[in-house]
Image (tube, rainbow, N blue to C red; front, top):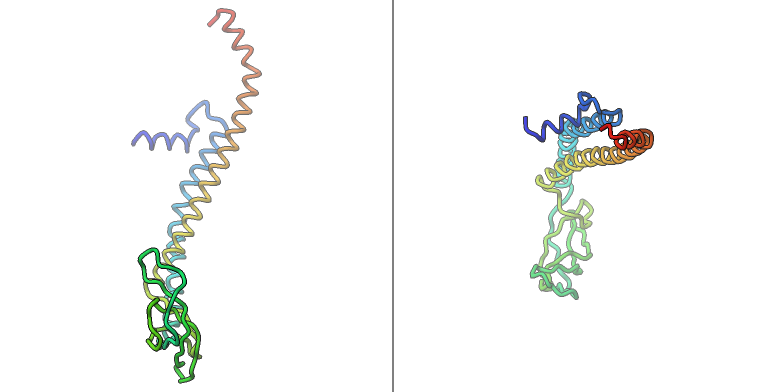
Length: 200
């Protein structure tokens, strides 16, 4: 067993030390809890992540069934007043028209790459009424949502336990310092007189 593991074991189980106080034992219990709870939270986080992924995947399938890709025709050139300083393709909201799945004419603005000319087509997604909507969530998006949910829950538990231990330890340190000060006031003069008497 390495030195770090031995030190950690002594912190968790200080009862073998005759100088250990109640505050030391309490700190050991808190440390054991802080180390145990995140481990117990791992399977819970995995279950939450799996459920989130399943829900998002069902939502993605529903979106694919209820949304339709159509071609929107630009009514104006796509221009932007904001210069592109990062070397990436700039996008501009440009007036356009398109037809709903039922054939009705719809108008609105669509995101088009700057430089696209009027009367050129831009692919968009619409709902059953022909209103513009976001593109359906992909399978990868559902996986990312599940992983994010699992990681967020586990990190919340981890940082919560770490914060609880840190705050508790600060409080226990204050209690120990006050106890040491009281004991020094009580026994310090006796110890100093013992030394001054030449009996050391």
